[in-house]
Amino acid sequence: MAWFRKAKKPKTANLSRASNVPAGLWVKCVGCGEIIYRQEVVRREWVCPKCGYHFSISARQRLEALLDPGSFEEFDAALASVDPLHFRDKKTYRDRLVQYQEKTGMGDALVSAAGTLEGEALIACAMEYGFMGGSMGSVVGEKITRATERCLKERTPLVVISTSGGARMQEGALSLMQMAKISAGLARLHEAAIPFFSILADPTTGGVTASYAMLGDVNIAEPQALIGFAGPRVIEQTIRQTLPEGFQRSEYLLEHGMIDLIVERRDIRDVLARLLRLLWRSQRAC
Amino acid sequence: MAECDFEKPILELEQKIEELAGLANPSLRDEISAMRAQLLSLRKKVYSKLDPWQKTLVARHGRRPHTMDFVRQLMVDFTELHGDRRFADDPAILAGFAHFRSRPVALVGHQKGRQTKEKIRCNFGMPRPEGYRKALRIMQMAEKFGRPVLCFIDTPGAYPGIDAEERGQAEAIATNLREMARLRVPVIVTVIGEGGSGGALAIGVGNRINILEFAIYSVISPEGCASILWRDAAKAPEMARALRLTAPELKELDVVDEIVAEPPGAAHSDPAATISAVGDLLETQVESLMALDASALVEDRYQRFRRMGRFTEVI
Image (cartoon, rainbow over all chains, first blue to last red; front, side, top):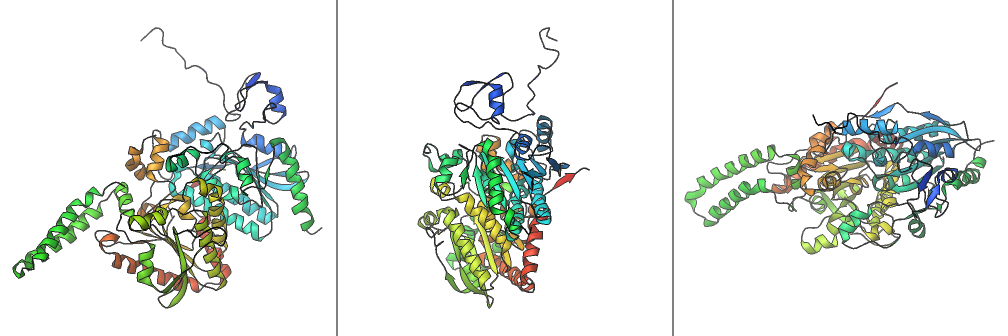
């Protein structure tokens, strides 16, 4: 055995907090490259004070920022993915699941919570991009569908915060069918006149955009988020042209009529509270 | 498109038979009928052991019956209706009304086109948002007039282009998923060739989901999957296996209800027999679903999709 071989593997950073949030006292902004004091970024809910870049944050952080302090109550946390296809590429799907479960401390790519927003009861789900690119398989589909069913039963509005590469390939057609399953749940909310707010964060593409993320009564995007059906790389390969500047960004979607609002992360709570007052509060029997 | 190499011996034998038959020599009659029997058993043999990638190639076969072929054989008085009333008419979606076995129905299907010019016009069966919006318009009209909806799926996927994105491809598909769930008439879906991802599902929310024996239905094409996970399209055959996209596998996963058997040599060797088998199944399904009232139909469709998916729950 070589004398210089390391006895232990070097320690790697704990990435459990979020996908692209760097550790340390100072932070380099992904958007403008500025070095910023970490505390200042944290205070602004992980938005760069210089350029407004929205760092990717974890599902739990999103929900905690959205709901009234102390009201956050997670449900359906025990749902976990299985490997129905016995899928294997370079790694088995089973190994990938374990790896991401360890990395994020989550069962899958979505957190569901009940809580209040300015005292108003709400069900909120948030996707975790750090868990296999926020991909939607059976668990994500089941959890959002259950959330719609709970909203229907309790007559509470629904908020889903999306950030996802789309349907999870490793669960094949079962992932695809989740798009229809969730949309059918949203159809029931629609008929019952219970509001659904979709919040789209960077990036939201594929089967997630082409189902619930676009079906909000109000669709709200974070600034500069990549939102689309096909990913830019697929489009470029298909049409063999480079894409125009700003294509598929929130501002582009707003211009083309696909979203209602672009709202900075720290204002989302206020905007949702206002929308609830405008759309929901007076509608109920007092 | 890759060649169906496994078909070569079949094509060679077919050609031989044709040549001999062309000689019109009565003394060859016995020989020809023996060769025909041989052809049948060869077809059976080859098509009984196709792997998932070969089935993918069969599902995309150039001579495979398309939606229009089903319409021609099964429908009377087909009246195609055009346009989404918002932007354009999309030839990649065929939609209209017809009589099916003496019952008025609506039908919606992907259209790939056969000859080069037609293929280009149909954008190879890849719809743009206006195609999905047209489909929904016709389905909602069917609901208004109490007609069952028959959907035929055969697409590589929704078109991934700048124009499609800027007109809201994602929104068009999403809206169809939600609105199809609400239709108060029977909806029967048949995957006749390629069921390519969201672009297929956008007309695929039905009370019953049928699939032809050699059709496929998948979240992503094997090539797309290979290029994402391996950065190598040559891994497509392997991914075709991994994705479980064949009819028997989908039935096992409870994604489809019925598999329609294809003749020996697959649908393209005998389109008429294939189409009439689909017709028979559709007739019984329409019959039984028409017995349900509107809210039972909506509930039935909800439950059909509600049970999709596999997971564990450890409490």
